Length: 432
Ligand code: ASP
Ligand code: MG
Image 1 (cartoon, rainbow, N blue to C red):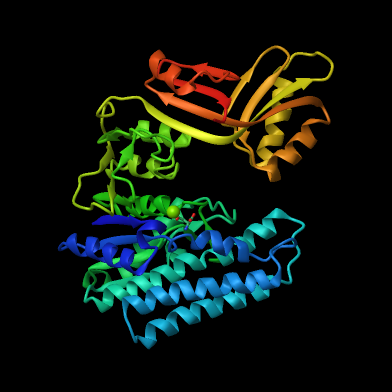
Image 2 (cartoon, helix red, strand yellow):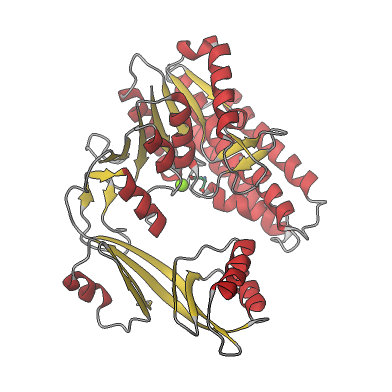
């Protein structure tokens, strides 16, 4: 059995869905294909704006967004299968459920971020529910036997809303049980399910796995089903050595060792979700990254390789960074006791440190400049420390660097901080 994952861009219009269906059709084999699908296009961003919260969008704006959501999905559904009342009704039913959900959550107040996170998952998950409902219906219409599955029944998490942590044992049991009971499994060419969403093991409340989490869903299912491979269909030809948005002459990496893929995702390479590699590495399942625009082309594979092929520098650019320097007020050393306090605050606020460095009198951290997090962080640190910061910075990571490569990337900009290991150079410079 193979697992395919299609992200939002691969199903963002009726033509895109037709293309996706063709890819699936070309790969139908004697065995079932498990297909994991994200919300269509930018639907998740739109749904985020509909999550009720104390300082949310005004009612008129919400109404307009809600209408946009309906028009967008109905246009795609009607273009895929004209005059199909059943499909239109299915989509409208889901939108109605969404309205009821929003309405019932609107009485909440949000003094606690956990309450907001709960509401977020209940609302945002509709993107995947609607997209998979339309696509499953369309594939069946094309004569491809497709079974729609509710991922919330299978992917079991704790109740950490917005970042559900997978309960592997419960997930494995739910999948095994479902497989044993479901005689239908074999009668279907395709099992189609949602990426990104899961259900709490305690009460089966909807959770999400973190933004861009559909890759991770594909990896979880592949792990629990002992799949032969996972293929992520993307709008790029494979794993590139840099983001084409920032870099003109990208090189496609055809082979990537698992550990390299984990390192790259950790440093912020956006091609796959950071949690995706671990489960498939643990079972030695290969991961293919292929283009849905040129589906016949080979793409990249992540697997049990020794080195990347071809060997070339790899670049990761993270913009909108802020560098905080934290200094004790009384000229005491930055030692373990101070670090413990600083990390305690970072951990409580859920802030990820992208780079850190310390000297006797200061500790510097580079983090994403998210004002909602940076403001409370600075306020809390200022109780004990002096805090200085530089904004509008870029964090550049270069794996397999040469001095020549570093010089050309820095292009004369002042370097605020630099760290170098045998394989990796990291630099903080002002944004260009
Ligand atoms: N739809 C979700 C998001 O946009 C999950 C995904 O696309 O992977 O973050
Ligand atoms: Mg996506």
